[in-house]
Image (cartoon, rainbow, N blue to C red; front, side, top):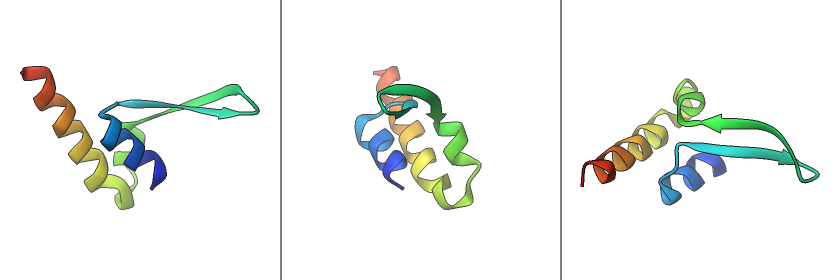
Length: 55
């Protein structure tokens, strides 16, 4: 939930995942979209990002 909220509010498509200040992965909107729980948040964030790029 936190990642989806950060991505939506920051209008970003990818979020780095770190442990002990070391990059261990990247979470993308697509990763969240495949999880049914996050589908609405990911879709909303993607829509907002796409709309901003058009303007």
